[in-house]
Amino acid sequence: MKWKIAIFTGALWCAALPGLAQETAPESPQDYAWGRSLTTAASSPWYRVALPDDVYQQSVWPDLRDVRVFNHQGERVPFTLQVQQEAQPAPKEQALRLFPLAASPVEKLSDSGERVWLRSPEGYEIKLEGERINTMGESYLLALPDNVQRQNVTQLQLSWDKPAVNWQGKASLYYSNDMKEWDLMQADAPLMDVASGSDRLTLNTINITLSMVTNTPRYLLLVFDKPQLPVTLTRAVVIENPQSTEITNVALPAAGRALSQDKALYHWASPQPVTSISLSLEEEGTLPVEIAWRSGADEAWRPLAKTVLWNLNNQISEPIPVTVGNVQEIQVTTVNAHLPKVVPQLTGLRPGQTLIFNAQGSGPYILAWGNKAAQSVATDLDALIPAALRQKHAPESLPEAWVGDEVKLGGEARLSAISPIEQRSQWLTGLVWAALVLGVLALAWMALRIWREVKEKA
Image 1: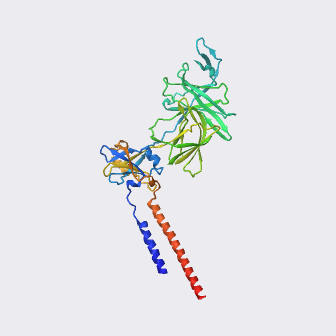
Image 2: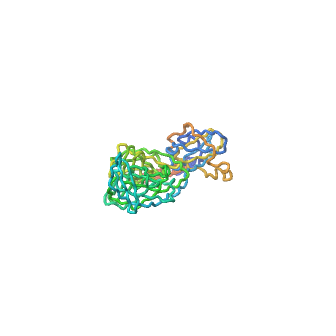
Image 3: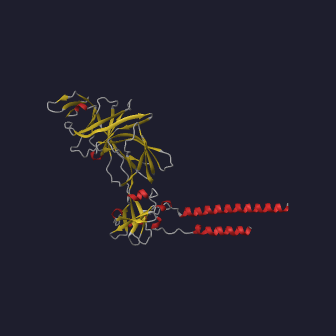
C-alpha cells in the first residue's frame, strides 16, 4: 500500500508542477475588456492621447493600472501616464472696512420710485433711488482696500456672532466707484445660520466678480431683506484665488436614487479618486445637507461635509472639495428639510490624465483597458523620453493620437480575471488540500486493515 500512496503523491506533484512553473505569457489585447483604435497622423517616436471618459468609468482600478497600448502586431508598447494637475496657490483673504448704516424714512418721489438716505456714524452718506426701496433692511458699507487684486476676487465672506435663534435671509450687493452711483452686483443671495442639536450650519459667502463690472469698484453696499436681524456683522473679507494654469478634470456623473424623504444614495461602478463633487438642484431653492462617503458598499459611512445646496438667479452652489482618496458611494441627508421631487444630480471630478506611448511596431494602435489581473506597467517619463530629448520632444508638444472606433476585445469576463500569482496560489492551495485528503484516506485504510487483522485473530 505504501508504494501506491507514493506513486499517487508523485503523480499529484507532477500534475501541479506545470501550473507552478509556467511562465507568464505575454499580454495581448484579448486580455482586456474594452478597446478603442488609435489613429496617428504625423510620424513621431512618441504620441500622446487624452484618455476618453469610458476609461475612467470602466477601468477596474482607480489608479488606471489596467490601461495598455498595443501595436498592430498585438505587442504591448511602453507608455507613461501624466496627471494634468498642478499645485494651486493658496487663497488669500483681504479684510474690508465695515460701516453699519442707518436708513432715513423712505421719501416718495414726484415721478416714479422712492428715495432713501443711508448714513453711518462716521459721516458717510449714501443716496439710493428706485422702485424697491421700501423693501430695504439692514445695510452695511464695505470699503475695498487699495491693494486688492480685483481680477482674482471670487467671494465675499461675512462673519457674525452665533445667533440665539435659527436664521435665514437674503442680501443684495451693490458696487460703486464714488459712492454716488450704485449698480447691482448680486440680488437676493442666500445667507443662513441654523443649528440642530450640537450641529451648526452656516452659509456666509456670496460669489462675486469684481473684474467683470464696468467701473472699478472701490465700495460695496450690502443690503439685507429684513430691517431687524438676529445677527450683527462683525467682519467682512474678500477671497482672492490667484490665477493659475487650468486643471483639466474629468466629470463622472454618479447614479443616484432617493432612499427616503430625507436621504439619497449615489454611486459609481468602481471607486474613483475624485477631488471634488458637485450637487445641483433642478429647481430654484436652497437645501441644507450633510454628506457622507465610503470607498465600497461594505465599508462604514464617514462624514464628508455639511453645506447648503442652492440654485438661485441662474447660479448654483460651489463644488465641494474631496480629499479622502477613493470614493465609490455618496450619501446625502437633508437637515430639517425634505428632498425635492427630482433628486439632486451628483457629478464627481477627478484629474484628467494624458497617456504618452512609444510608437514601437506599426499601427494602427489599440488603447485597451479593463482587467482585474493587470499589474501596473506604466513607466516614468524619464524612462520613456530621456531628459536630453525633451527639449525637442516636449510632452505637451508631441503629436496627438486620436481615439477612434471601439475594438472588440475580451469583454466583461476580464473584469474578474485572476493574475498569475493568484493562479499559482490556487494551485498550491489545491495541492495542500489534495495531500490532506490523501493522508486522511491512507489513515482510514490503515485503521480498517488493522481492525480486520484484529478481528481475524479474535
